[in-house]
Image: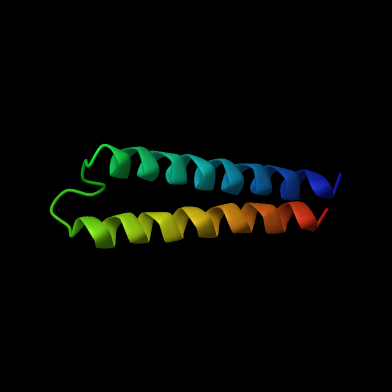
Length: 65
């Protein structure tokens, strides 16, 4: 029963990170802005770092089972 919160948190973080990386990749591939009114390179980099961090946090939660 103690592993249920870790599974839920890991799933949420991993899903959010994967979708954010996928969305950022699609936006960059289509040369569309990731964030309006911001430097395209900076916004894509920040989104990729946030997505990678969330994905890594999800993997870390799964290792705590």
